Image 1 (tube, rainbow, N blue to C red):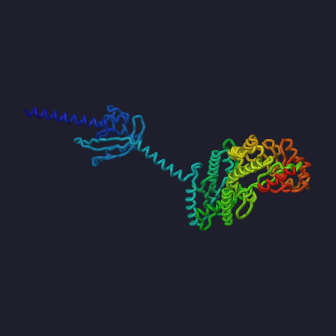
Image 2 (cartoon, rainbow, N blue to C red):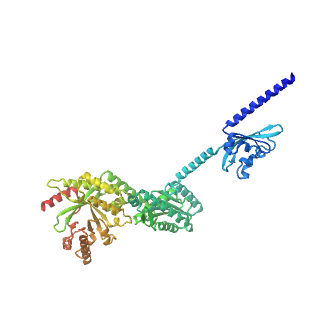
Image 3 (spheres, rainbow, N blue to C red):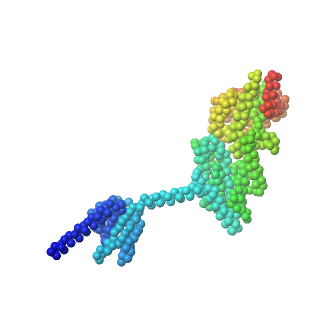
Length: 594
């Protein structure tokens, strides 16, 4: 009986052991972690389904293989942590440990894994049990997050278009450089470079082309200034884009302003070769201001002074460099005041249009007027265009100012047309700058104003100077053709003061040529001027254009023009520019006289 009882107990124990092993196997097979057990020699004793999936070895293939050879990385040194002695020590004093290391799939792909390993006693031997998890998704997410943070940091410190350091980085670099120069007793210089006429490129070819040009300029500057250490040191953050078309360069360890001027000359030379942008050869220049540090120079003051010097370079004719002096501060303040005043003048409608008659040379009859803008300044009185239009061009205010001129002129033309007795059907001429003409929207805006006012397009003439048409870009000429197709007349203003050839006139969509007053003023005294004027009049006739003489001040000049066959004329001999009310009375009087 005792023997039977022992047999029953033994079978019960076996069944319990079997159930426990089956339960354990079920747990291991449903685990989302790979499982392996290893003996003291590092040979695999157990291997679950997840391990088969993770490493590509079937269970029957893996059993009895060394773990290190089965899942260890290609580099033997990188797989040392799979060695049991390295994990737990020779006496197994560390019962559990968690490590992260690189493991290898049967196909050769390596990936990061986290191993949770425990050392258990099995009689006189040790068995290691390892749960292995693939942590590559987490590490990839961490890497992506780190790269995103690095990218955001880079974006915060660099210009997104050119990749150059931005103003914040430049100022930090400049502060350190100024402090170092003060300690060493050396000097540094700041160059403030502005690209001349970038606005014309933006307006004519579009902002995308302007951006392409800025990227190309930044690349040239970067390459050029790498060699500048021959005269001064320019660090990695020594070149920056401040915004728009403005760049700055920090030159360290300069011995004199001449060193800085040499770098400025290199910056300007960098711009000389044409840029190829949007299928066009673009020529640009740069104006550069230079400020050299004194004993107490700070970053903000150096950059401000360099900016003031840059504006002085622009005022001096552009494509040049200027060294800062204290008088520039006053001019900078005056410039800011004038700009703000002009901006407010447009908003407050302080601008006025005056009209100068254009008459027939043959009989003196009134045929049209030229609209001339004036600024009725609250303190300085009535200002001529020469006193504020250059400022409008530099600041971009010429665009809203020009729109106002067109709207006001066409409104007045409509009012003259509506006068009793047939009205005053005068042709009205409006001057357009190159900056305005380069804007693609100009033609549509004029067409809309013509429709709104009810004025026939043939009653409007656009006057443009030779300088505006001599640009490398084709857009101004295309714009004039579109205006001419609309019915607007095109006049070339100040002919003879620019640098176009007579043959070039054949390529332009022109209806009239306006002879500059410099030729007319000497007409009755200079045989050479008389011949020039006569030739231009005959040329205009041959090309189907009208000739208009500007600046006629004497009867003798008028007689000469009549003898030469000139069509139209304007000048003080006939009338000075006058306000709309005066022009209305003058026109009615002329009609009655006729």
